Image (cartoon, rainbow, N blue to C red; front, top):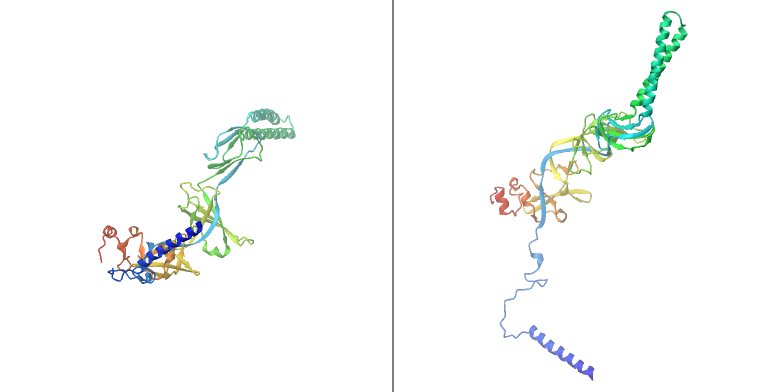
Length: 397
């Protein structure tokens, strides 16, 4: 009984709902008609969207400019110094004092460390006494020789003994001086391998000194490029450590010998680094400039669109763009020489070109950064703000 009551209630609800909808769908014919927009094919007022004007695609542009660009050979290498010395001791002993640390600048013959001297002081004094003794003996025999009281053989023996004592004394003096470890060149202490109290031998490496004022890179160039390299050739050096900087270089030496195994020859390039940003061991990229053009028409690389192994770029013509296949000349990391016959001051699309086609409508989003006053009416964007026109002294066409 309870289920029957529920079913009856639901049936009544459905009945009254249908009656309400029917009244809405079939209005009284005497009711006054109101102006209702005609629905289009897609159910929206105004008809099919396909009949509306195409929406402009937002882009950013940049001008083509004239400037210098070079053709170059690119090689990777590590930075070295022309002068780098490994310092060894000439005698054995204990390290008594350290006077420099890594990074310190030193001059040639400047002390770096001191070894214990006591033993070498005694050796030098003993050698000097032996020399004095032999010198006295020699002078006595010399006087006897003048009186023919000693033979020539005895006199020669004393002379040789004096000479030997002199050499031993000089060696003792040198050993005493060798207790002072000195820098062999002007430069910077690159590495220190010893500590206070270490016992060192003549084979022990103590320091590495590098002259950072004479930096260079060694390039191993394929033999096919031999005729493109020459003495004092201009080079440009870059590094990821300072990506916004370029360092000037020049070819210092070219090896006349080609390695038969690798088929390369060595080219040594000097590097100018007055701010000492570069350090030995850094990974560098070196460009050997082969040729340069001073007044080339330059296209920024972000403007290039690659399709089917071809390169294109879009130029701005009013409120639309034209697609042009790029004819390349020289190129570097940032720009490409344009060989196409296009005006110097034309604007090219650098952002948003992926969605463009030839003739696409565009809206320039970075107009305040672009020198519109240099453009003709035909190449100028159709939409330019009043502020931009006033800023550049432009008049409405």
